[in-house]
Every structure is written in structure tokens, then in C-alpha cells.
Image 1: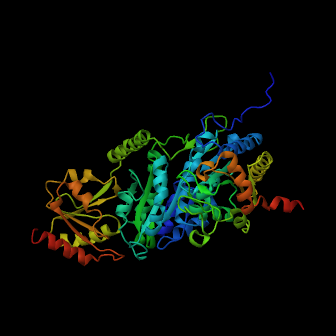
Image 2 (image 1 turned 30 degrees about the vertical axis):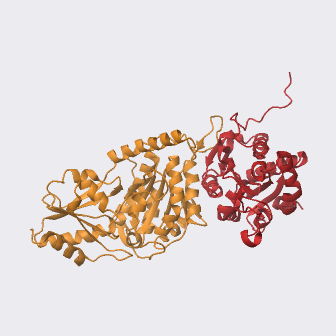
Image 3 (image 1 turned 180 degrees about the vertical axis):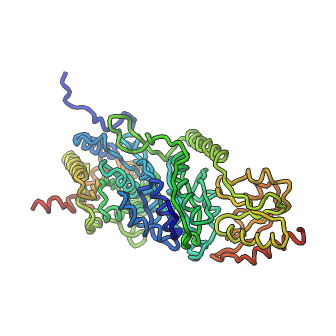
Length: 352
Length: 250
């Protein structure tokens, strides 16, 4: 398929359709409203269903029902809306159902701002709903990668039976880039024999959420954690940028990693041996990327559009919290390249 | 020997956990019998609530999903949109439907979702132990309104059938009870009619069952049914609140 110029929010909608998603339940919120707008006109053309829900809470519980019924299903929102969806995300997770949730993050907390942010890292990666659970969290840094990750998200969700969050931000949602759509399912997916379809002549299907006996509830949790262990073993993804000779490494994801990439160009020109580890999965966090580098990297420079929500994960991954320096802007402020260059020079000093 | 009566196959043999005198058992059976008589057990999917009937999925012998508190109409919407040819029901209590799930039931009704909601109204939170419900009558005692519900302090009850019948989306709304044999017969008729309307794909159908909670009302089962007749029904009058099919028949 030839490349087309598309706005991020519309491109992720098209990506979902290309991946076989026919059901979307959502609610308008800036800066992602083009996702429901696009799907409201495009889904009916392919026999799909778009429902504008009365709230984010209702939307995610519609997703719960559609996922239980065996469908590939999507919802999208932005930070405060994703906060509202946490109830349903927990239920979907507990029931072991597949669903894809796109978060075009904006500055917070509360109503915050409508400008791009990355301060929902903890909400996505560390939980957000109640109980012990994980979401798979994918972090695109371009419109093309958002497209690819939305497609992959459906396969991961179906394969592991978990919610998958595509954690982008308002900048990726609002900007236009050339994209192509080449969906190929890379997972061997089992038929959804558990789905609510009516029992017909067979046994009834049940999607359960209450496990009232503590021993059974613990066993239920542990079964999920067996799945999470497989995900941690198999699905870590990251990009290494100019890391071959690097003595210093930026760690950054999504939109902030684009700015870091430009900053690295200037720092390399100035003679610094610096590269970047860019996590593409935030959960599972790509600890494998750090295991092989640990000894030779002098400092890890974490750059985020938050007050440092990823820092603890980087510290855990590199196993030396003293090696970490952080620079962040928050509340909808996107850092400039100059700021990152200055931060890098300050950390690295004259060490070229 | 000829079988003149047998338990509906749309209920499992799992032992009900409900208190003595609770009407959930009656209403479960009516829903199950109605589906069986319509030969729709194989096509039925029920969204069950948080509340005393949270385990209804174990009692109904057809597909079921346990929903978040109040969200059954949203979850049922998701299911029905995926399987428009199946019979999709929600079974909800008054705290679930008329308090925490008010938005979900109003909007499912307003959208005209082609589902059937069975609403059990006994004016109290049962599972959590007798707290005030949105439908607790004025003067009725609850653990969070110990001197009885005072509308000046605790607000007023909600009449759900009356409220939903103001919307264009629903096609059939009826309030029934199960405090007498005649009422039980009428309740079953209403549930069956709602399901038949859903099968025809005509729109949203809603049956409220004015019910009892002997345990949390502090009454014997017999006295609780008397309370339904003497106090609950006067506040929540029985009858058809909306029926597009009857209007079309005129």
C-alpha cells in the first residue's frame, strides 16, 4: 500500500480497521476527538459499529461487553478520560479479555491542559485500576509507529488476553506524517471459544469478575501473573540509537524521544559519545536493553514530558540509581532541542 | 408417569444463596421460564449486576457476564452490538440501576438499545447490609438513614419507570410485582412480552419488579410482602408506562 499523509488520530483509527477491528465505543475529548470522528464515518462503511457513549465509564464498559462477546474492540481517549476508564480496564483485565485502548496524553493532573504530555506513565504502566494487574503498554514515537503499534496491539491483546494500551500523546495525535498500512498478524491466534455468543447446543459461556473465595481469587491472580511472565520474557521492545560506541545514554520514549534524537545529533557533532535507548514497550519495560549495556554506560539521561515517572523503571533496569540524571518538562510543555543539549552537556561535562 | 410440571431448564441446579423470602428466586424463575417458552435459552446472554444478584450468572443456565456496579446496560450494549441476533438482558437491583448506574440505564434507553432490562426494586441495598437506596421510601429505615429516610436530609426516591417513559428510546416499560400469585402471573407476562419485543428488534424494553427484602427490612417474608402491597406499590404504582406496540395496534 502506498504512503498517504494522515493526521495521527485518523491514522490510528484506520489502523484499527485494517487490523480487523469493527467496534469502537468512545467519548469526545481533546486532543483525540478525531479518532471517534473518523471512526464514526469509516466503521459503518466496513460493516462496523461506532457508538458515542454517554461517558468514558460507559464506553469502557461497552468495550468490556464487546470484548466478552468475542469482538476486536477499540476505545480511545486522553488523560482525564483514561482516568475515568480505569474501572473498566481493571474488569477487562481481571476477566482476561482482549481490548485496545489508545491514550493521546495531555498535561495533568485533573483537567490539566490540552497540550501534549507524558504524565500518564504511572497510570498506564503501574496500574490505575485496583488490584494486581498489568496492561501491555506500547509507546509510539511517530504516526507510522502509532499505526503499527495499534495493529500489533490487537494481536497482543488476543494472544495474551489482556488490555493493551497504546500510549501516545497529543502531538502524535495532532500531527500529520506519511504512513502506510501493512497489517500482518504475527501471532497464532486461537479461536475465541470462550466468547459470549449464546450457548447454542453446547455449554454456557461465562465472563466472571467476582472470585469471592480468597484462595480462589489469589489463584486467579497468579494465573494472570503466569501470563505476565511470558509477556515480560517475549514482548520487550526498544530501539537503540547510536549506542554502539556510546558512553552516555539518553532514555526517552514517544514524543520526547524525537527531541532527544535531534539533540543527540548536536551532541555528537560536539564530540560526545552519546546515544539513546528508546523503550517501545513501557510494560514490559525493556530491561534486556540495559542488561547488556550496564557496565560501559557512565550515565543514563532520562528525558520525559513528566516529572520523572519512568525514572524508577530505568533505575531498576540499569541496577544503579546513581547513574541516572533526569530532565523533564510537564503540564503540556514540550521541551526544546536546546534544553536537551544543555542538559546533556551539563551531565557529561567535558567528557568527550 | 406423565410429567405435569418440571423446573425450567434455563436455571441451573446451583443452590441459590438468597435469604428466605427474597423475591430474586421468583424473578429468576420467571425470566428463565419466559426464555424457555420462547425457545431462546440457547441465544440468551445476561449481564448481571453488583448487588445481591451478583451470582445470577451461576443460576441462569445460559451465557452470562458479571458487570461493574451499575454498568450492565453499557456492557449489554457492547454485547448486543456485536451479536444483534442474540437475546441480551440486564438483571439489576435498585442501587445498581437507579444510583451508581443512572447514566448507563438512561442512555441505553435513550439510544433505544435492543436489550431487555429486568429491574428489581426493593428499596434497599441488600448485599452491603441495608443502606439507603435511591428507591428507599420516605420514612423507611436504613443503616445510613437510621431514623427513616427524611427527604429534606436524604433526598427523594426515584421512580424509574416514570422517568424512562419520558424518553423516546424505550418501546415497552412496565412495572410489576411478585407479592401475590396474580402479580407473579402478570410479571411473567410482562417479562415475556419484553423479550418478544426484543426478538422483533423493536427497541429497548424495561420491566421493573417491585420486590421485598425481609432481611434488611427487618420483617418476616410474609410481612415483607404485605409491606410491598401496602407501602411500596402505592409509591411505585404497577402498570404499563409505555408500549409502542399497543399504540401501533390502535
